Amino acid sequence: MRNLRVTPLRQSVDLPFATRCLEPNVHAPRENATIVMLARNSEVRGAIRSIESIERQFNRWFHYPIIFLNDVPWETAFIDALTPVASGEVKFDVIDNGMWGFPEWMDLGNAKAAVARQKGHLDDWKPSANKPSMFFNHPALKPYKWYWRVEPDVEFLCSITYDPFVMMSEAKKVYGYTMALWERGETAPSLFYQVTRYKEKLNIPSSDLWKSFIDASWAPFLVRPLLSWLRGRDSHGDGWNWCHYWSNFEIADMDWFRSKDYMGFFSMLDELGGFYFERWGDAPVHSLGAALLLQPEQIHWFEDIGYLHEVFQTCPANALGGQLPESSELGADSWDKEQPDGIGCRCQCSRSAIRPPATCSNALAQSLRAPKRAY
Image (cartoon, rainbow, N blue to C red; front, top):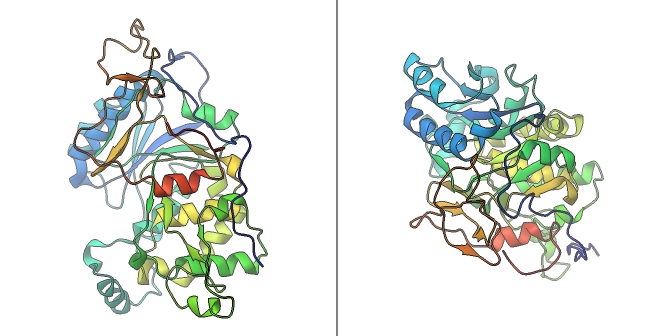
């Protein structure tokens, strides 16, 4: 009998890096890191919004470089608009078709039919879920160890007064996220099954991190193998809970993505063609890859960072007495009401955005946090 229950923690293996505002250490050594945005020329307004936000809330103190990647050459208007917004070095580069295009072996007709069955359209579906999963091997990123992924049209809702790259490195973290959501099952019906086949082939043990992604079957043992025909199930009938780290915000060690273990995992998925014939996204692939290959103590939940993307936000309450109103570095900003259990720094949460259900956040935090009151 397989034990798929997460072992209850007596002591947390991951906690917020800060639970109040800190005085930014503008002279401290930096990590070998960069901010990365994958965008198109048409997204110039959304790109400006995002970069202005991350500069205002973080990078005006730390001045990390920003790399913009596109699948076509950048237009002068985009370059001219974004360059003055950043406080650090700015680079504009192109992802070639080999990294972000359809492979030569793929039958476009079959792919179009498969995507249509998922209520999608091939014309506006680039296999970006596949190719950004490989962008860490882009020549522009090769010199860097750490990256922070930022998308157009996002907003950072709290001041980030510490260096997350330094904190990740010191804590020996590999992958950091801020929000966990459900994957749409119709976009990745066979992904979990294929990942578990790979796991069993290599005899990779089930860590508590892996178990936090599992919805164990309660069906009779003789019936469970039949459940493997359902999407999101393994050969034993146990299921994926469909939770994943929302990868439009991720801070990670690219040396792990470049490692033999991850590249072996990714190559297996690439050869199966699910990035094209299904719509496997980089969020579930990164998430299941981390669950498979990392340990809980290598994951960090940026619970203290307020973040808004599309209609969803995660935004902590502000720490009571922890807003440093006298700080000249932070300036005379306003912020939401401070709360006794708050951990945020000068957060201004959206009044209209939705806070996603805590189901996935709670599930994936099981292997990170010992049971305690919710922030």
